[in-house]
Length: 181
Ligand SMILES: *[C@@H]1O[C@H](CO)[C@@H](O)[C@H](O)[C@H]1NC(C)=O
Ligand SMILES: *[C@@H]1O[C@H](CO)[C@@H](O)[C@H](O)[C@H]1NC(C)=O
Ligand SMILES: *[C@@H]1O[C@H](CO)[C@@H](O)[C@H](O)[C@H]1NC(C)=O
Image 1 (cartoon, helix red, strand yellow):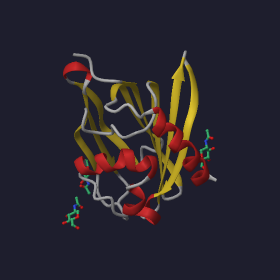
Image 2 (cartoon, helix red, strand yellow; image 1 turned 120 degrees about the vertical axis):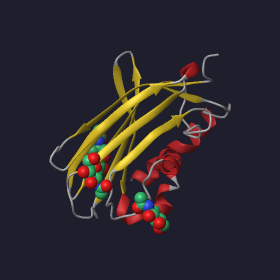
Image 3 (cartoon, helix red, strand yellow; image 1 turned 90 degrees about the horizontal axis):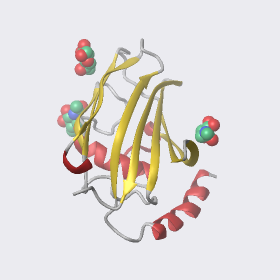
Image 4 (cartoon, helix red, strand yellow; image 1 turned 60 degrees about the vertical axis):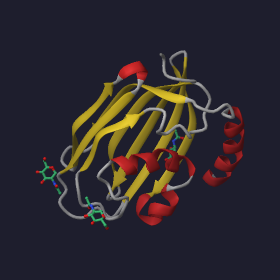
């Protein structure tokens, strides 16, 4: 079902995005632990750089001490129009089942490939470490491939670990043709 939707939607989006060089201007990021006894966010911030570029800083600490071998990620992309949210994508990924190959494709690939390059995370399961993004850059060289039209978006990434939803991260960003001069 999910696969069908994606294969239907992707070509349309790619055509819409035919004109190259679009970028994301990140306005805000919110990280919430749904279970602070399992994991919490020590850092969650957007540092705005010149001309609308940004860097994301995240430090997620795990209090759960055993290896985490059950991780499900859900990515929702919402388009925001006049304070209303329209869900654009709802993609779920069994991180431990698919791991690297799957991360390289689909919407998760667009997001995860650049993120994996910059974080300390090895994209391996089980997870046995804190997660750190020390200034993940959002600029012309990152996540430009996401084939969505201009507009205001919310990226909603939830993670379930050991069968329960544990975190909820929201990134608000505007898709524009280029960063302001
Ligand atoms: C998104 O997908 C998940 C898992 O398939 C489902 O539980 C959830 O209800 C869906 N969310 C929306 C808003 O459709
Ligand atoms: C990532 O994987 C490499 C090679 O498998 C390993 O040497 C390194 O210690 C791992 N890093 C972390 C943070 O687990
Ligand atoms: C994760 O961070 C916490 C708090 O900074 C630290 O006590 C813990 O040792 C770290 N865990 C790992 C596996 O590095």
